[in-house]
Length: 255
Image 1 (cartoon, one colour):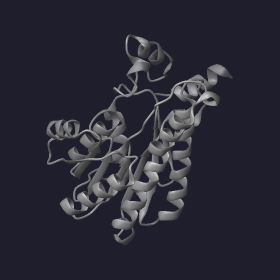
Image 2 (cartoon, rainbow, N blue to C red):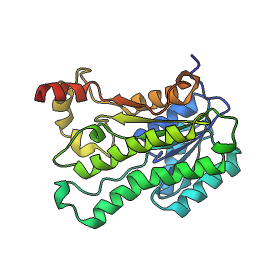
Image 3 (cartoon, one colour):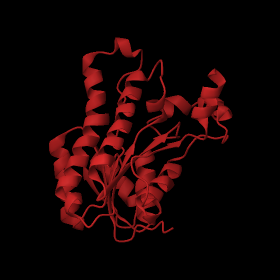
């Protein structure tokens, strides 16, 4: 089936680097008009310049509703429509036992990782998607952490599990105008996850992955194109796990 996005407009939060950059680049190469958003203007500009293809940007903090609204409105003013929203931006301000997390970092994690995607989805729906001819798509970038427990990153995992449930709920509510899906990556070689793979640590993880390697941002980008394009037209409310087989390998090792 067709995996082109010609005539579509996509907005990618956290699109200046890492997984968001990989998705924005893949969308642009598939023919979409792309708006990337991130907190730092210089990072957005550098990413847009690197990707090319007429990619535009708007600096916004994903956890601030007024900035989200400004970004959505800017996208519509520049491109005239909004067919694809990728809720990719995330925060991980705490590492340690969930039982010991302080309230401020708990609230920040949830504000960015679950309230943010809800607000951006509401804006995209109300500003354009609900009155569109259909064919719209929202893609939430979750994590395999949302499907398991973790002694260090439990707070992050809780927020990503909530995002998976939000994906299902919005899919049930917004069809047939909008398909809503999630991608749950394993360890991808990005700056965001550098502490987990740098200095040889990633090599040990990769050995346990049946695919034999860590993920690349381009892997996630390819899946996002598939979901947003005609090829994914009968997929909604789904979570695509992309972790090189790590989740099942680790689970089987425990069992």
